[in-house]
Image (cartoon, rainbow, N blue to C red; front, side, top):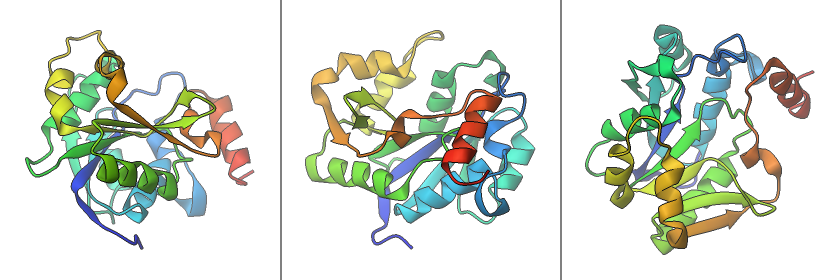
Length: 206
């Protein structure tokens, strides 16, 4: 159980992609305790104190929703998931958040090594400073998940197809608060079967 609950901060989990390089939907891959990658991510987010979680679906939406059973989450569907743009999923997720949410933690659906303490550290940094962007950093490299305050959402929602959220982030570089972490988990996601095998090995699952 989380020590604190964050009722005005939401998580947006991006789980809409085709996973073409993986050959299987990444969020549905088996992970710890006979659960899926998605279920493990949701568990970590809830352990970090997040009570409002939106999962953005696309490819295999029904299976994604089934994998999230048992968790208190909402779903937002990206009908244009086939174009592969992460920005569209982020925009769909942000549009689905209620007005009382002041910031969103943007979570990759293919990052099973996400850790509740790191997510909580990012949230606490935002609550203490009010920074518009909070990003975890390992050895001077930006990672995920990153937190974006509501003030910047209109700029992200206005981005055209082909753009990326980093365009807005770089525009506000002076407003970024970096949270230094002690391991490279924030830098790693899974794109290929080899990535998945490597992550399973790191997690002691092989």
